[in-house]
Image (cartoon, rainbow, N blue to C red; front, side, top):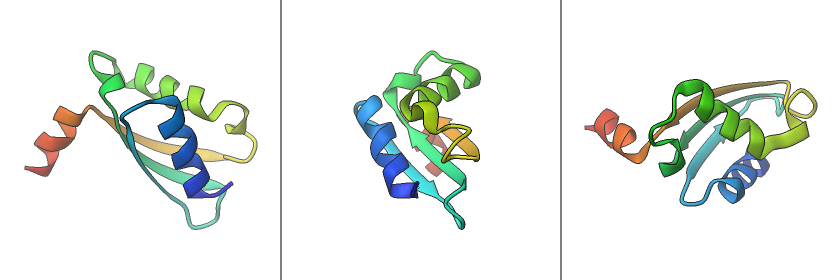
Length: 80
C-alpha cells in the first residue's frame, strides 16, 4: 500500500479532511490528519476514526501507523 492510497481512504471516510501520509518503505507510515470530524473527540477516538477508514489494512498492508490528528482550529493554532 502506498501513502497516496492511504490518503485517499482517509479522505473518502472522513469528509472535508486533509490527510498527508509519508513512508520510506510502504509498510511503516506517518499520517497527519486534519478533520472537523475530530471536534470534541479525544485522541483515542480520533485514532479509531482513522483506523475505521483503513479497515483490514491495519496489521496487514500497514504494519505500523503513527498518527497526528487535529481539528482545523487546532492545526491553525499550531501554524501560528
